[in-house]
Amino acid sequence: MTKLRTLLSVRLDPALAEALDRHCEQIGASRSHVVQQGVAQYLVVQTGPTLGSLAEAVLPALPKRAARAGRPSRQRRFRDYVREKRRR
Figure 1 (cartoon, one colour):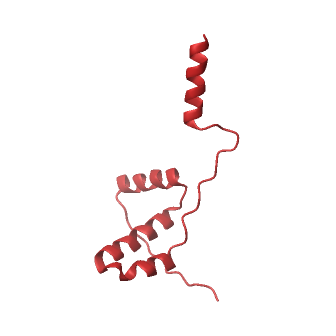
Figure 2 (cartoon, rainbow, N blue to C red):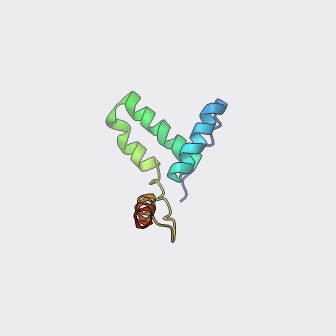
């Protein structure tokens, strides 16, 4: 048995839509997931913690960001840069 989902269209201010896109890119999630999470959090805040279990049941887990293969972390790159500067 598949879960039926309801399609909901929302009009966003262009600045808000751009901020949403940047946020989604940073965390590696879809706009749909972020909006679902926001609505669920809003309902929990407005109606109390009784909807907490509903929000957990409805929302899929946030996808993990894919690790950048072969590229060292920013901290490691900076540390290597500083070490190289000291050698010169």
